[in-house]
Length: 191
Image 1: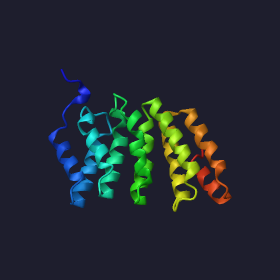
Image 2: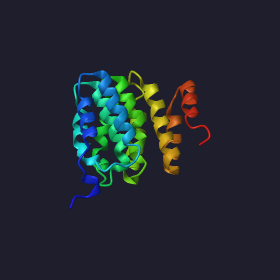
Image 3: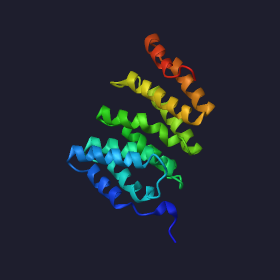
Image 4: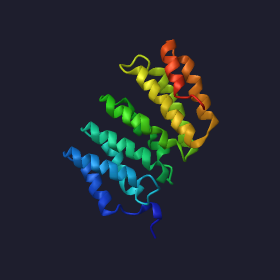
């Protein structure tokens, strides 16, 4: 007997998965929207698309990579087998994508991976903290740092995990420029 989590993807999910890697940008966007909406709640077909989404993370089309990364983040709540514990690094690789918009979309969605699984949460906080420390010299380093703090804030707001808050607040003083330090602190007002 098959477990609930190994269910086949319904035909509309299969069609949307095909559209993600298609050449029609409108169909691609519609597919993303429908899959994202479906993944707002746990879905039984998560593992029917998991490996395919992982392979799309390396697709030649940057939009397809962004969509796959964001969908894997959304599907984290359905990951009852804990696959993200080994696959989180693959998702986070896209946050270094050559196309900054792709990297940014996945970075801002990454907080979702740490909501339900405390092991993944610890991995994510460690990875984002390391990225914060190393990205200052990148082309868009200040924006990456701000996005990291926003992702950590979203994770904290969803989980109320004090360790997430502590980690984020420890990063802000690492910024040498007072202007950016002040901007970064705005992501954590009221926390």
